Image (cartoon, rainbow over all chains, first blue to last red; front, side, top):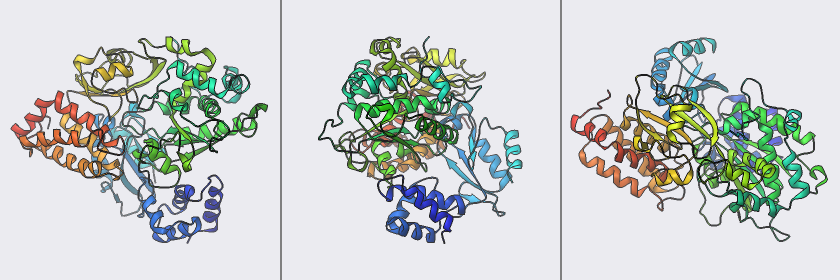
Length: 154
Length: 424
């Protein structure tokens, strides 16, 4: 069920666009901000609110990298694996994440703390390798800095 | 050396606020345009300055605006969309401009909106650019409070408001018509052209989509004129360019330099040369979707014409350097995995071809490739090339592949004959 707050935020978004459908991605982001992912029920409710079919809204939801249609952990690690980060050693960072967390791309730790996903270029190639955890960007990753970051992210 | 786009940017402090920006001469161009110039004069001036699109395609900005229907019969509202969905691997220049001087982009959008008489603007912003988003939102608030955005801007009779649309991430959103679909709340698949967005874009209305860096040039052209702008380049092409270098160089970074600065100057002087223990093998001059250039091209000036003559594309002007410690086949796998993952699936060559290419390349990299696979790959570069797809994603993906097959042919062959990756 969408909370009243979520419903209000979605309705606010509709004001910014000439059609309701244009606000659908923003609406999905609002759902996700509160619930961390978008469930089937949420798709149906947002679709009703916006006047789209649930199937069409789902096709939009699944198109975008940052709309999660499956539950994710408390923190989502987005590791850049594009060319510059690859040249600068993102595979080593991935191996270390797999080793420390026991999960690989698309998986969530048993304690629900982290989900690990690959991500296209984060636009910080001069400070590669890079990753984002939730909304925080981490640059110039090394084995040492990665361990520190993980430790600090409860 | 003049650096108009970055002169207000100082990484040691935050961006200039409205007052600081005005003190540095900001919004003078917008005021001049709104009070002293006609829309047609603005477009003509930018056309004459020969400002080419900095997002990748290099199309003349002024010429594009001249296709927008004008006058009393023109459909309204018209839209101006800033493409700030910087997602081309290796590219980190628009971030510099938005984080460093958000008012410059806002002023530019007011001017361009006036030139095409657009009422509404959107900045289509990459979700990952959280700092840009915060700073732009603040700057838009300031500009609105000071009367630079909204109804009847500074008593000119012209009204324009600006919104930020923060995307949910997909490379396809950087494609002009895919971006428009995403803004309308649809899957970011490309649209058939014609009609071009200038005629029928966002919600079927005339729309101009322009990259951040392209837009940011406009206030300076208004302030200093077309001839000044043409004179900034080292070659016969206009302006400065935000160039970037990443990969195994000593000082990766992004610099505003005269158009036509050579690849060698960028890598050796500005980026400090290759890291110790790493030798230069090749470079993707304008991001992941441009052809590799190699040693023999180091003295080519980075401008649209020269790079094209050398067999590649200027793209975004931000280069990725391949060194001798990394396998060109493995890098090709990395690049094609990206393109296959980001393909929107709209047309068959891209949707089915790219995963096939990834499979072929991966088997070669793993030492399981056959000599005939190289021919198959080369065939794919034709079938996924220009003319076979709705948009430029697949043709762009083929650029680094066809040039890797050409310049690193012996590396590919060694994988097949030695049945392993020589770098592993």
